[in-house]
Image (cartoon, rainbow, N blue to C red; front, side, top):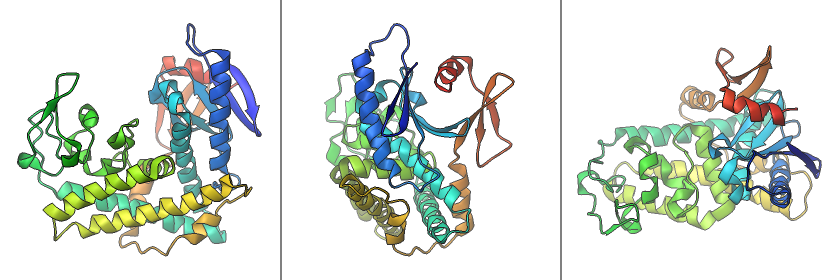
Length: 342
């Protein structure tokens, strides 16, 4: 384990043996990752900011935001360090989402704004989910048939990929064909904000409203133009095929993009030298109306924050939102976590 400090942030790297990670490389990714955490922390309320950055040389699937023995920790694992700035942005956005949840429980003036913002994100997710579930099942029996809302009318494949599977021109798609094996038909609509649509690493915004928020915000920070094109493309298809029904999705995405754009304005101010933005960006959000607060809260609860705790020498995963949830950590994961948690 290699430990360093950057602008007050603790950075820990776990380098397996053998590894291609040299000391120079670890120093490079530590500095770059820490700089991004510090930038994101300026927009996270005091008391909820990220405290440690972990860089384990293991499977990328372990990248996450976690509470590790109470410490707010961003984990960027494996190949994700190759695009560490974007990876940190995504996982730190989960830290922001967790902060808003915790902030909304208090009696401070900003608690109501935080709660309202969360409810709106939950409601947006519910709108997209409801619209998706109302569509007729897609015909994905033909390999390469990825015209998201096209069903049997999807265009024929026009070329073949290096792997031998047919592909469809991007202009006819909502998704990049590279997502084919990672998605099932029910997830297509919510994937409009996935960076895989413009050739970057895939994310999973369909999983819960926290992932929708994190994927959209980090995509907006790293490539606003590409995200806008992907959303615009999806909405154009919806408007053409569902002219009487598409407006709810268009309105939901307008609200979501307003939220992430407001955050980015604060992010830019922080980059220009303002020290503590905190919850100031929240006050610049427009007032939201949520028709079904109970339904929105259900989706917020599903976007759980996972804690790592140790009991009698055994590591467990628990959920902040569901105290009854406990799962033993697999042995292969416990070793590197113990090394970095020292």
